[in-house]
Image (cartoon, rainbow, N blue to C red; front, top):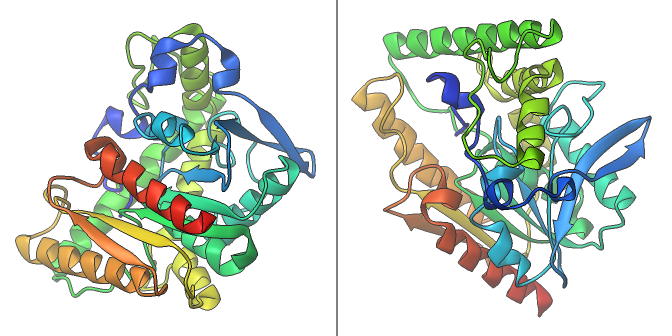
Length: 333
């Protein structure tokens, strides 16, 4: 699952304001660039104390505000870190494509450069869940546990669809890419602002100066839209092949007794293009894929939240906090 893959308007590109955005004017709450080598910096902000550190990976088009209901309660349990992927937030763009492997390698470099004690617990939502899974595949000694929040996974598009459904999805995908190209061009020409959004973003009301700076510098820079586009290109299967899916499949391994919880939103697939048949197939495969993810660890479990949609960290933040608390506790033992 990915965030607003089929494009549903201006709000698609913007997470709502976080508690921090509404209650602090301290720029440090949003910005802490870390040099990771090659002249690049990635933005990471950490709060709380204790081990293992919990590192959050947001989904497609996401930013650190996505964890606004979760981060503070988790910081009361242990140290937490949120970060902006390349091109997002206050992070520099990537010199290469935004593939799952490159994103995992960036995070590995960031943890080292920021001197974050490993192993860490990774909490990934949606596409961030796929990135967290690949990271655990590639860097097993770095990972003390996984909390996958309605995560994407390799093979999630392996369902039979009717020709008209395939056509509808392809058209929506092409439209989404074209829109991102247009917004990147406008941003590069300096034509995006709070007063002239060109329907590329929407600024929430009530932001402090620090919050407004975080939002505006992201949504008015071309690297953001180019990064989002690159993530999408490498995630969506073309002629049955997904770059991210291929990378995760190649690296896949058994997680042994790694503490692991997968949370599944029970109210997905209620909107967007496609027939009732395709939505039923998607929902079945989504649950099956999450079950398979959980089985990769003897401690893994998949919890279905019937009253939550895809945004579990907003709909059922208590369930996400409970899952992280459980995984942290198991990791400590």
